[in-house]
Image (cartoon, rainbow, N blue to C red; front, top):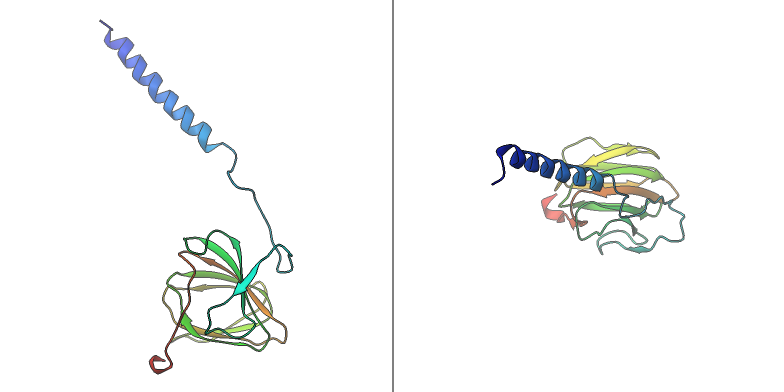
Length: 157
């Protein structure tokens, strides 16, 4: 019959083994490669925007799956384009990469974004924008939830 001391020793050793395995796993190499992209990268695959968006609008997925949480995209519209009022199910974190854009959230003062400007858009908050530069506006957008855009009906504005 094993002694209490040997049983306690086995329990302690088992706990230490589990902790060591967990620590080793936490320090294992990343399962996906790091990456960096510019707007000009030829590997970007620009897809269409929802039909209510302006002609020439494009979206390129940078990381993640747009149908799932935590996807990152570039959103591009031509210079002078007006982006109609819309909202997203997810909050969005944005940085303007190029151009100049005026963004207005319902009930708030307009904000003018210039390259390097960070902006946060709450989930389900209606907003509209205009690319006020002559060249295209490109936004980096990190979505917390799946990527979507819902037009705001003209009557409800």
